Amino acid sequence: MGSNGQVKHVKVLVLGSGPAGLSAALYAARAELAPVVLTGMQLGGQAALTYTIENYPGFPEGVGGAQLGELFQKQAEHFGATVEYDTASAVDLSQRPFKVTTDSGEYEADSLIISTGADPNKLKVPGEQELTGRGVSYCATCDGWFFKDKKVVIVGGGDSALEEGLFITRYASSVTIIHRREELRASPLLQKRAMEHPKVNFIWNTVVTEVVGTDKLEALKLKNVKTGEVSNFETDGLFIFIGHTPNTQMFQGQLEMSDLGYIVVNDKMETSVEGVYAAGEAADPHFRQVITSAGMGAAAAIQATHFLEAVTA
Image 1 (cartoon, rainbow, N blue to C red):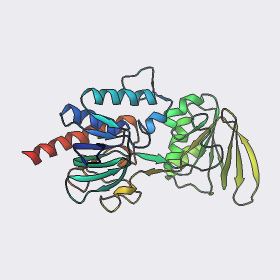
Image 2: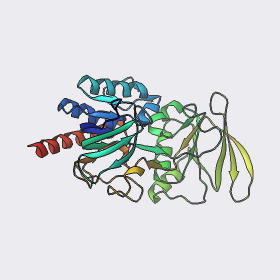
Image 3: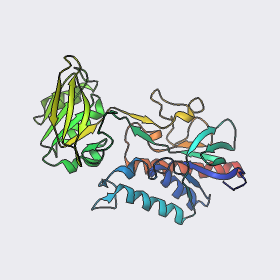
Image 4: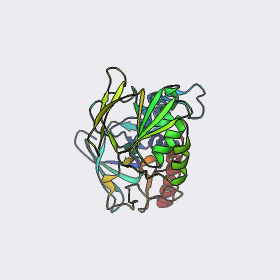
């Protein structure tokens, strides 16, 4: 924003700086559209919070999550993208150019790429935040390997809890699934596989009330919701899978969304408003990987490029 508070006009505005947003910025920059990226709250998105990413192609030894985000950013900037440490607070998609209000001013954008991501739902109990990355995780495919021959607890009862729990059995010595009810929401096939797996145990009708540890996770305080009985459970790892919430609240009523709040896109990343695209976890409840988000971002920028060419032709 200029110091005189004028509205900045851009051809492509990208909301969010995770793999989807920075890949979109790279492609838009190479098309000489001078995209502007608003970083949002977390530079590099959720991926930047992952200690080591081992499943992104091109890094056989793995790469730090924050480091990969930095590399994405440098590459986008190298081709002419601008990354602003700013967060969108409101949007008006009723007419073009689209209006975006941020913490520091206003933008007008000829096209908009929404890559605001999603946040894993938290237990919101003492110790959880402090020990995140020190035994507490929200992604088994990211962090499972660090729990070789260790005891792990999974909280949740849906498909992702069981899928991730079964995935971790290839590393952990034991996987205990703690669920607040006495039956699971997960599909029958996954339930059958989990129940039959020699490493998997279940604790029913139970919630975690506290995550205990000084510099790393040591134990969980548990409470049986039926009997009220309180117990201590020693563990090396806690994986929390109680769903994700996409960061899409400000598009409510302006874009078509699923019941869970994910932005609906077609196979070209187009939303229900022409010239507005969505990529990454704001529009993806299924895969949630760095590589799929990056691919969606690239696709969104390619479509935005075609759209702008058609509009100005």
